[in-house]
Length: 297
Image (tube, rainbow, N blue to C red; front, top):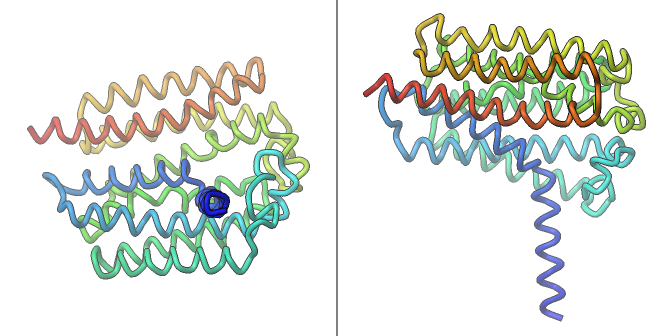
């Protein structure tokens, strides 16, 4: 009896965890942490890094949970998301609202009292941008939803920078710009091999509204723009040769994938590009941090 109850509680906790989209949250928090380290000429204050990471994670997780609630009917029509607790009705809207509210509220308190007010307000604005402006307004309205709404998902480096420096200079916004450019080809690769899912959902995603060829062309064009954007940290002397080499090599591989996808489309290639895009961003920001530390030595 006790074992059954324990398993049921563990299963419920896992369902709540899934609502926070852990993989996406981890990547966002990783980019925020990179921003924290780049904002400091040496090692940033450990307490600020820990508190900033926790607070940003909480608000990001709260935004994703609210997103799952808002899109529960859409998720129920898609194979990729049909098993979410909100789509199945296993967790009620009231429970999700309480869960999201507690996470978001605690996150704001952590950021306000242990980091700074600027980071709290910027993170709250990001929460509203994703959960409300993108999810409710843009996503069902236009096939350019991920382009316009991508700003909220691109904010983590600026949040991390603000946590440590108490300001958001041009260098931080340049990191935001890189993620902003990266988001459309990253997401469209997913939308391409999940096109039938999005057709069932009723959302006006680019592969559904404009077709496969049009979308792969845009993925290709954005991959070139992305390469150009990632060279800017070197151009403004924010980074050195180590980062430059990494940006060129990683960007060249991204473009190669995009060319292959446009010339001879397959779901396998789209899936490969989607997976690579995640690795790409992590390695690019990791190279930026490594270059930063090397230049300090």
